[in-house]
Length: 536
Image 1 (cartoon, rainbow, N blue to C red):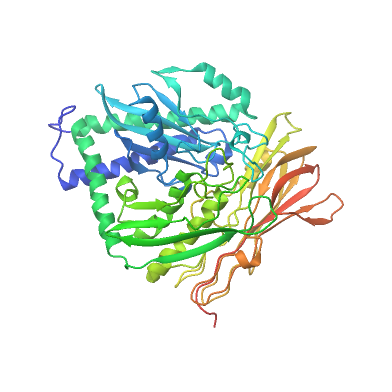
Image 2 (cartoon, rainbow, N blue to C red):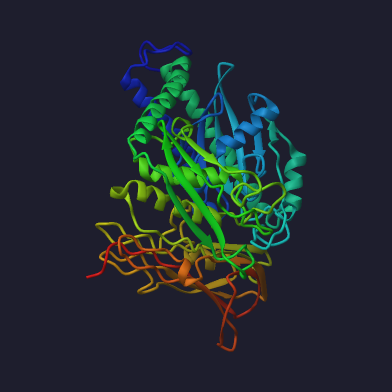
């Protein structure tokens, strides 16, 4: 404890103390992320970084988040609000579990945990973790699929229920989870890692209160949000007063066939508030590419975060000035029980379009569009070495958009994704698959004074007797790939193919469920990024 500080007695909230505590709140979220990263069971968390940790004030407003996956940016406070509406303030020792897409969640594999932080019997704040679990039941291994037609096909639903009640584990709930998922060891192990991360956050809140005083820490949270709010309003007020309209298209409605599906947005600043209207987007579709309302917010927050700069922190003080408009029944705000498990394809397209719109509004900050092809799959197979049922998941990056003064990045998971490529060594050690190749695709980025980033090809050969699972890609149509900016060229498209055991190759539709046999190889190729400026 620092000299003169007593538990609960506030120190003067001078600018230096305020800034120290602001960084301390961010450190809480980052340290939680380290705990979860090191404690998790599944490669999708510990290798691919598909998770996020957050700290909240005692009203449930987000004050800090870990720098992991932007797809979760700012959305956990929607779920926490639902949990607090249901339970009231959480009590010491409580842990709430939630994943319901129509109660502030994303898709069902993203399990969210929340834990209150009490100091001397007083609520100080909350800690939270969201992580993609490899399977939460449903009709297919890995749970998510573009072919799902209703939410009930997408596994277990947790409407903000207590996983731990007053420090006592709700064992029947753990048993229900274990009985309904395909890899209970992974799911339960990852849940324990999330609990450990939240607990570490609570400990760090307590440490801060011991050092600076509880009232000072609480006051610093409020001051941080107000400071961010003032900066956000000033930043938005400095932007041009005009409306920008953008539109783009998904390849199809999730079936891998059919007509493109429109995503559109109007962006305008009014009195220091940013308004994003996505009402012109398509009606909700009958398959799993609809986007829960919280994820529509996360996609928008990412684009905003990319343009406001690092001087403005990501917390409720910023997001309270971003207003998204859309009626229910649209693909970006579907009605229950529309399927949403593959919503990330649409989220990525929205993020890309919003970055285009803000680039039109602020051309000195603009970049060309990056790829949103997002090749991904979850294939279940029994490992002949162990007899254990496994689910291999992988996500390929692709080409980033070129900048005015630099080429696009190669093989990155763009916009709200930011997942790492699964290491080949991990894939081959833990799953009955062999990675035949991982390589950049030459000339896949758009031409220009600065070329777009290159896509990536990866080939997977099955070593088990059989594998079944969903897969998908986007941007398979040349006219829907990443466009260039200021005369830069459009990128090359993505594709997916299957090599039979006789060596022949077969083009696959862009989305579906695959049944593979031993010795067959599936090959994914992601799209490139757009070029910037006219080529010489």
